[in-house]
Length: 352
Image (cartoon, rainbow, N blue to C red; front, side):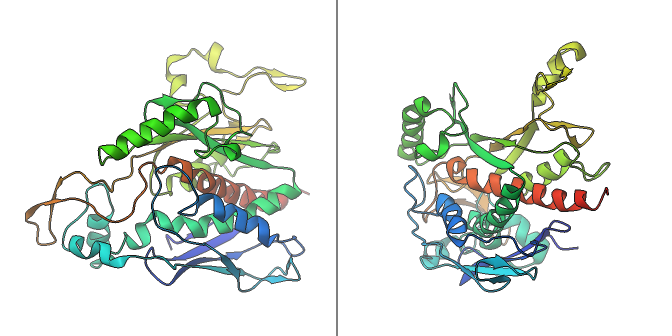
């Protein structure tokens, strides 16, 4: 059992830490003959990289240039494992020297030490959001496979703090710097982020995802249901603290006569189920929302303990995002694409 490997047939194993030499992944199960668009992979990485121009993000500057090491010949997947690396070039490890002896509230410092007996305190090590770069690279390969089936994964920021989008246009995120689903909300979101930054604080948000073109029949009941696997994948992103599909928690206030999606000859009339029934895709759009917590690295004095268990106070230095939600958008897309790519390959073996 390895917590660093995900998937069955379309399988990834990621490696690397925030302040190590590089991050990367080995992706197995990419079908031979798939065209591997290296420029597309790079564009996906550019969407989440630090220094990409998103307001309130870390001052760390990384090129995040992907280097494919194996599994691709003349732009085509050979069927063998595809390995790639992304070098770290702008680490400031000294920023964390004074915090090495204390646990940062909201971070995984305490739990990593309890599990392994040792921890990489430079930027959080493996628990850093920097780890998601490898996921996005692998997810880009999954997206290339999904395109062969005309399946498109799109996500965007639905809210930042108390500022919420009034509409949900999934073509909008690429056209504004906060990846917001409603461009009209961007100005208020920017001000909310600026206000938090002035207070040396941070903000959370909600990312909404929609996948179109999903055929009916994907999902492996009973333990590997489509929604269960997507929840597993998205909840494995460090800053995500909740997920709901379709109407989500709102169904608890409804009657069955309202919650049930009517079925017509043209398809489902509504989609409160979020595109999943019995853990299997219905053919309607797969829809879910993910709650992203405020960045735990803040410049406010916080209570904590040191590594000997004594009470202490800490102010977290270094370079950090005020709100991580805009940069998590491509990560949510990547993890969703990895689940769907895997289930597509599994489904091909289920029926003649």
